[in-house]
Amino acid sequence: MSSLSGALTEIVARVFGELGLPAEYGRVTISNRPDLGQFQCNGALAAAKAAKQNPRVIAEQVMAKLQSLPQLRDISLAGPGFINLSLSDAALSEYANKMAADARLSVTRRRPEMVVLDYGGANIAKAMHVGHLRAAIIGDALRRIFGFAGDETVGDVHMGDWGLQMGMLISEIEIRQPHLPYFDRGFKGPYPNHSPVTVTELEEIYPTANAACKADPARMERARQATAELQQGRPGYRALWQHFFDISVEVLKRDYGALGVHFDLWKGEAHVDPLIGPMVEKMKGMGLAEEDQGALIVRVAQPDDKKEIPPLILVKRDGAAMYSTTDLATIVDRVHEQNPDLILYIVDQRQHLHFEQVFRAAVMAGLNGKAKMEHLGFGTMNGPDGKPFKTREGGVMRLQDLIAMMTGAALDRLKEQGLASDYEEAERQEIARKVGLAALKFADLSNHRVANYVFDLDRFVRFEGKTGPYLLYAAVRIKSILRKAEAQGDRVGKPGAILPPEPGERDLILALGALPDAIQAAYDERAPNKIADYAYGLAQTFSTYYNQFHILSEQNEALRRSRLELAALTLRALELSLSLLGIKVPERM
Ligand code: ARG
Image 1 (tube, rainbow, N blue to C red):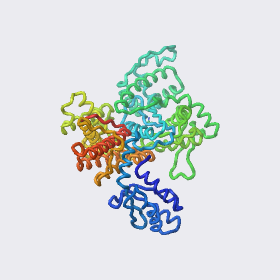
Image 2: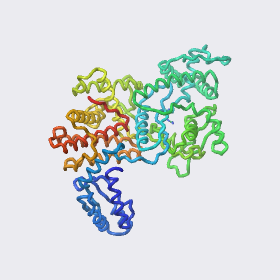
Image 3: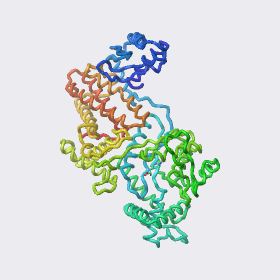
Image 4: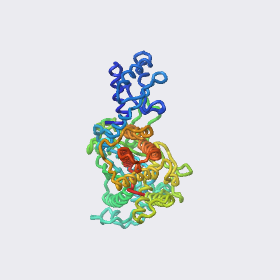
């Protein structure tokens, strides 16, 4: 089973086929003129063009065949050959009952593919910034969407742990604490079990080292040298690096965890270091990697390029691996480990050229196995000044602080609305945390990922408008209705209880029947905002419905049961949509 428009497409496509016309012209979509019909099919125009016939004549032939179907009512012709159709009320209730009986809410499962998603990218020792936050929110949503659609998914955090920032850190610590065993070339080990620095110290050391390197070429050279020696395997540096890695992962796990973002793999760039040597040899052997002023480069430009695509630098003059090199080796690793059909990179749009170069080089060298590779770029979250979001002091906002800020704002709003006021403190805090996270995630995911948007805390935590809190409230309100129903002896979950809708009720079933379309669109376009839009529309439709129809107080038992089933189905569609966005709904507010 699929969406309502999908079910109708099957019917109309069959009719096109019977008339000897290509079935793909039978596509039915939700009408953009609901006053004329619930759905429309514009295929007669295209079919007529192909067959060199009058579109109205074709449309009439199609309509004549549709006329006899009991599922349909109000079939009409408009303009040059548009067909408007509406479903009978019996067909609507039949659909809703089937949807209610299906654990997957009529969303068909696709033939599974293996999909690796790369949406972490936080860098060791550098504080996570809002770009990493967006990657995490969007990537985690895509992982959930692909997984629900039926794919096998693997989320990889792919930490930045192998670049120049490592050499900057190591050389800075060497300057500050030269006597540590990590710097003694004659040291026979074993190295200490505990890191000589904490994560908090690293977060201070890195900016200091970075500034010093920028200001002084000799200092920068020292950092470069340390990076190269680290990558070549100098034992003391490796041991120190391992400390950085371990203490950073611990903090990152906590931070991503607080955000409700999950990764299956905690690998980083360094993990693929052993694969770089053989890969570079292979690319040299193929004649793809060429020597250029002491560096090794891969020319990835193609004759029909619209803009210049510079060569990819595989190995720098000093022997150090580059960002592109580790990304290429990571493809080798993924092909070896997961053999994916698809690799999705959820990374800042500004890295588009980087991925273009990497993908081209991977294909040229045949590194990607059967995997298609896609860069799913995203825009920036900006402050009110239109520049990437910073704290009031001008620094990067720590994730922890951001979450605390969202929770605090959510608490204020709950208080204003008189919500959760008489609950225990612990539950109120838990609700506020959920509301705050929903506000943050929904604000992000309701934009198309490539769009920039402005961080507007006040608007994000509002309970009115297209916000996370509004949707949580809508879901919680239905939960409360269902609890009351249960208390008065009305249990939901009875098969076939949904009656043919009254006119004002049709919109709700139509909205429910569009759930599979929204998930499909989000999947096809890699665009979680399709689900965010859907959830918002459904919540609004339910709200209108609830204002118009009595549910709990309806005296007629069959009607009451039917409406309760619709409410319960709406809740399931809402909760599924929100869960695909990584948003959790509290039991009550
Ligand atoms: N660490 C990188 C950064 O902070 C992001 C990594 C994204 N993933 C990748 N496979 N390149 O910019």
